[in-house]
Length: 101
Length: 274
Image 1 (cartoon, each protein chain N blue to C red):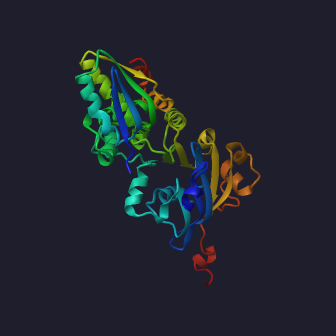
Image 2: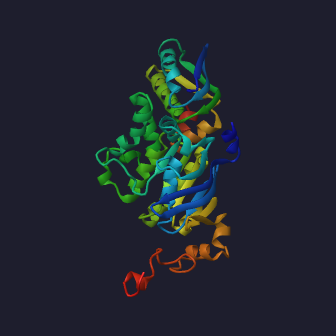
Image 3: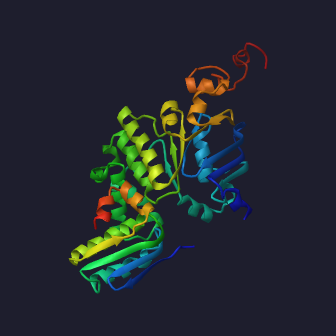
């Protein structure tokens, strides 16, 4: 059984919830990309407080969205990143990139 | 439910009364081992005592004659092929040889499990490969072929591949063999870093006493198909148990015999009747 990830957009913030495993990241990847390309304001937020587990694929999801935002000349602020995601990012040498985004 | 409860506690793996035979010889003759969640557990013993066989039994490549190997509630010897395929996604294995695909670049070696087990787009595969290669210090070496790598680099590239799917469990088969002191130090540091940062559970099979004792949280010593000693590195290094002491101190003969079990020598030379 695959665990589910969901994305909810409210104003300038996209809130992710659930589990970001190697399958479920695909449930939300396009939705976030579309939002960043179309309706997200120049300063927008990604709220990760409701993520219960993230694999490394969750970090790759964020990197993809950061690239889209940059291309659109928007700034995506990553908020409330869970500690285990920070630890994963740290091992991959990406701690600064994600916290400073 | 019963099997779930069996490993609901602090152990990721519980091995009970494991028996495995090769030909006439019992490789394991009633072995009990606990692998604690989030810790580094070492399985030590002289060469030929079945340490690698134990990893293959945990991975389900071999099936035990009897006994159980519970991993997070799944009894490995009883799983179907499909169930085993799912459970193996949670396991990373670093083989002694590194076992990189020689006709693929470092990048493609690390990407390989992602291509087999996931539907991720190329952009995410690239991010994941670069993250894991960065973790082992080889992001800049990704275009190299395995034949262009030193032994230590090959081991690290294989480690990046072993962790690319974020396994719960990683098993290292003789990770220190054939490494120069610098790359040995790097491997020791990486095993500890990955274990602690990623919340991994690690199993190290090794006969290198000092490197293993420097990194393990708990050690089992195996000989003659049995667990002959266990405890913290300090306990195992300072044990009074004669067979464990022989192994730890590297004495060629003792309670663990120098000779592989054989016929009486005089009989073998046909100087005396059988």
